Amino acid sequence: MFDTIRADLRHKKQWFLSEKSWFIRDVRIFLEPGTLAVIVYRFGRWVDRLRVPLLKQLLTALYLLAKAFVVMAFGIYIPVRADIGRGFTIHNFSSIFICDAQIGENLIVFQNVTIGYLRGQPQPPQLGNNVFLGAGAKVLGSVKIGDNVVVGPNSVVLSDVPPNCTVMGVPARIMARETDWMKDKREGRGKNY
Amino acid sequence: MARIIDAPRAPQIGAGLGRERRPPSLLDDLRADIGKKLELHADAQGRGSRLALLMERGTLAVVVYRFGRWARALRVPVLRAAAMFAYYALFYLVQMFTGISIQAYAAIGPGFVVRNFSCIFVLAESIGSNFTVCEGVTVGNIRGAGRLPVIGDNVYLEPGCKVLGAVTIGDNVVVRANSLVISDIPAGSIAIGNPARAHPRPPND
Image 1 (cartoon, each protein chain N blue to C red):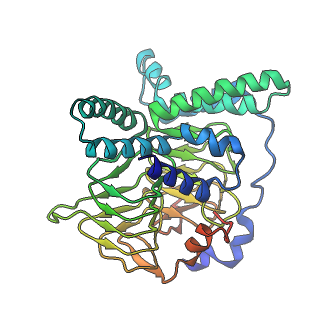
Image 2 (image 1 turned 60 degrees about the vertical axis):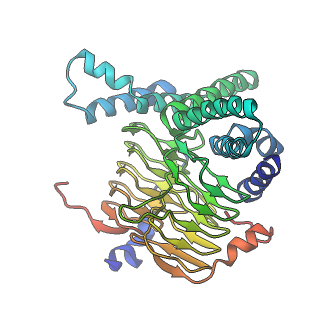
Image 3 (image 1 turned 90 degrees about the vertical axis):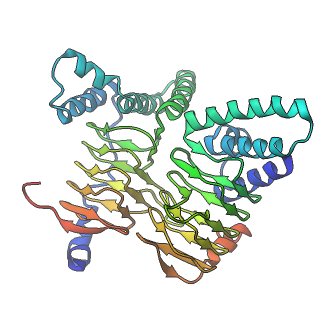
């Protein structure tokens, strides 16, 4: 659990807070609603796999309380069934709803994002590694999104997206075939964001 | 359509915007904000319903934002630190209870109204007077843009729209619901679509 949380925090710092002061990087990051939600989700995952009888029930109660707090106060809903890889980052809060999807590493989520089911499509979405969902993006139905994909703000993804693409619009269409800036940023070469 | 966005009018878009605002005056601005809110809800008659408007989450967020602007501009260091601490605590509580996050960095003119609540993020370089936001609106930063949005007077952002990056929005603009504004919008137009295009605003609108 702590390993994964550390990886999540590292990714958040690297992506959003690389030029901020130490106070923001190491202290205020724990006050951010997105970070709290990620920590609660990781805790829930850990409790879910726990095999010690009494402790498990106690910690589950604690987790449910924490989850209720996160849902009520920040409007971020991530169930334990969601399988999200390391480096999961939530920037900002409110109206974030993620269903039990298969999601790779280094997912970045902004406010108002939904990853969910669509009527008549029983499978949840599958997301690859290094997916970036801009503010207000919706990924709905049994779609597959490849690695290194950027989904623009306010877009609605209803069909499969191949890897290394930027998609935008309602419904989302491919705008560009390369997302090298994400790799540059992750490796510290690009400073923009 | 492209002609409207392109060359001839483009230099005028930012004319007079981004100017240095006068130092914030807490009570004057607040009076203007609340007056504007009552004006928008002109059907709310009677003391009870007018009071209910003042207890709304949007009003609460505006009050806290104005307090933050005032606290930022304080001159005495000790007083400023205390006020900023109080402001951050209030800001966090407002974030939690309303989902409205209006950062004190953004210079917003008088007559600022927040309608409804949840998922409202406002961070801009400067915003003119009579600015209205609804739920689900984001005004903010985007990758590599370098600067935050600059918005003119009498701008109305409808629910769910996003204004991102180094854009300039002129005066008297309406951004329609769920639009995405990532390019400049000239004055007196309606922006609609994802990404948004500017249409001239009908005179009786």
